[in-house]
Image (cartoon, rainbow, N blue to C red; front, side, top):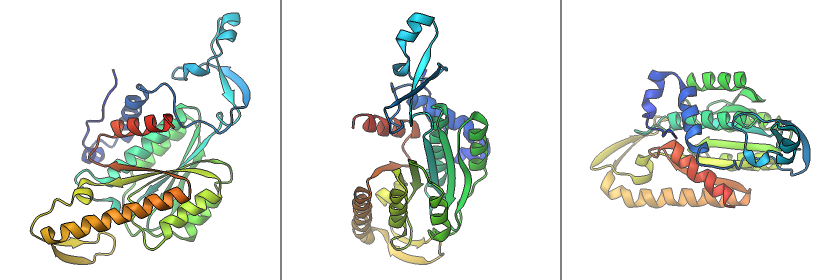
Length: 293
């Protein structure tokens, strides 16, 4: 039976077991798919390996099975060692929303890492915000993903979103063609988030951006006189919610239009996610969309 994500993200801290939740999420959306879109870039046959539970049956060589009565899976040149670099925004602006963006982002990062390792590929984690830390390089194996889960469980969102030389130096280590997944609310000063797209594109990364947005940001369902505080800078702005709603929604719409334009320019796969949506269903919809391309 396919489990669904019904655990409130605010319970993650109390549970302190992000790996269990991530595995449930991945199992939930894998069960409805016949194959994953996260495949290598080459269709050139490389080798065989013995079938392992969870492998995609479409790659089983049935002729070999007929001759040997053993299951072997075809591997293709780049399918065997795809490296996925997960870049998680750990700035203070992510710590917002009743369905908290940072909790949702941590769980998404864990689920994707689990998926990659399950496919015998490699997953790495880079955390960016007030400073950039290449927390774990891309590797495969159960122990590696357990380390990644443990790291995510202890990570906090704090400080400003500063994208600069330290992040560019990390990106320069992505010296082979691979997959880069950005998980962020994309709130950054100036053009820096677009410079990140540019840098990853230059380093031959296929880029996927999961744009996390809370219901409060999308719907702006506030009423009356409000005092809004910038989580990263502490700046406070008093507004009347009813009078400001139309202007806010227009500005937020322009912000998203610019993001979509820049993503198209740098061949970025842009995927908006509401953090009040069940993660397994959101990922299923996204993966099915990629499969249809």
